[in-house]
Length: 217
Image 1 (cartoon, one colour):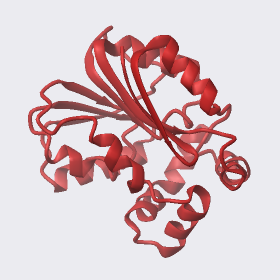
Image 2: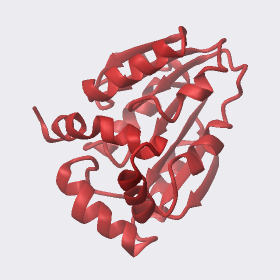
Image 3: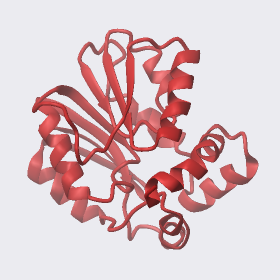
Image 4: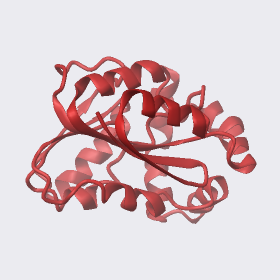
């Protein structure tokens, strides 16, 4: 079992509790690290996909589905493929989607750096909080671009370093050590240059140490 798989095996249930607020300690830790809750930016980010969207979506990594299931409840016309490297996270997502009777979703274990899909398969690729986890970030960017259709949208968010010293401390001294994030991390300028190089109609905004984006291939 590698470091990432082991890390998410141990934190999969805690991850859910921190976002839902079920655990006061974990919710407080999240606020201390980031200065806000993940729901503070995820809902706005997901507004970039219309509820009546009828194309094919790749959600990678889906995590436990806690940030997306309410959106997917309203997206009955879409075909949604959800991938995560962690089977433990994926099993929670599967249960959540099943409990909410979301039937247009297929969940698969997989690696963003080695996807089996053909070129230009998806109309939208959604990657929330994944790019600071993926160990081979260049390969992840390449594969996401490869499977995205021409004029398709790449929507997501990631941690960027150098914005908040407290956040950087938690990332480097806690999350990196337990394996839930993987360096190297990008600065705001670095990720801006990467997205401007490979995409058009680049829309970027930041919430403290999280950069959100909506770009078109």
